[in-house]
Image 1: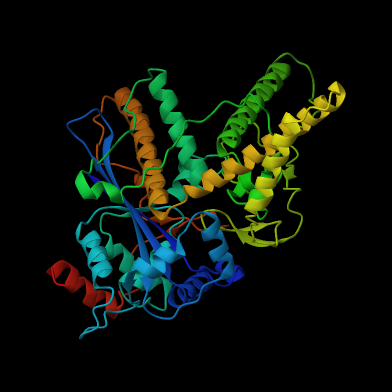
Image 2: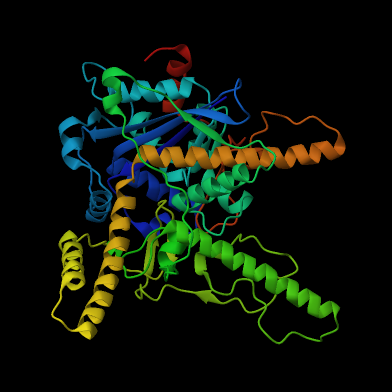
Length: 496
């Protein structure tokens, strides 16, 4: 059993408002325009192979991060470049050693540019394995346009083509986290760390399995030089309370970047979300007990959404007894402007921030650090002054440490790492579903289907702002595109 997870870094997405159009067909047209005029800068994919001879749900994982260079003219948006540079993308490496490719249909003749990346994509199709993405509609359109063929004009034709390209199915972990797991937030880093934390807790507590276990391939000799290790530390405790940036908490992205005075610590966000849920459960229990005791009507607000960021309210894990009350929607006060922007997954959200720039001024960080050292070591014989300066130094060091952590977290942003996180979320979701099915089957004395995966999420792609997903199926009213039909003959015929 093998999964294929894919993530990309793009040169831009074009008109953000068009990508959030009410009509899905209009959205698709905007995505097509972006895919035809922009390019993929980095392609990441991860292969998860289940190890049947080992403890249940053990996966052998191979992660790849490919730097690409489109051989044709394409648009680069300054905002996208700023984001990528801030997160460690090496443009010198891209233009010096990027794998070349041409978009659209095969050129034929002597033009062999892009043959290697197209051959790789063809092999992924021939593998007939499920494709797993996170918020994957844009990703699939770019993959299709850059490595397969020209995008069809109609959305129905596009979904018909996809259903045949990936007969084992397509899964979107953005849809999984919102509609199946019902996490408080669904951006990639949050969902990954939440799944990792829950899996670790289950293992540590000795809870009955299965649990997700990950193994990586071992490389020897010169191959080891191509391996880039990224540490995934465990979630820390929240002993030191820090005020969290509500914008980042909701979307995984903040227009102020590393200059934001509030915390962007995803681990802390998860712990505070969990604490908030527990507090709400206790409050609901007190209210139920009060009703049973004949205490009369409850005058205080019983809203379970109190304090929740705006985009966290839909699909939250809700006690059905607690659906009334004042729905208080908290906004991020640190980002006062208004516009439609994107979260860290590329999802368009109607948020409060107009600017998408993230200032990355390292000199300011160094200045803060220098000030903290000078304040902490100065000694002019005045205890009061020393105490004040030490407190100033501690505050500066704390600010510097938080900013530095944002830098470190940003440096782990890779398309390949994103693909790994996507696969891990899916593996954990399958394991959780398997546990629930096993419990239900035990009651009915039935056998669990080991290959069931996530049947309720099969071929359902997340659509921002919509209550229903996009179904990747071939409708009786649509036909596959001509370019796709010709391509599939080549793919299944074994020719390149």
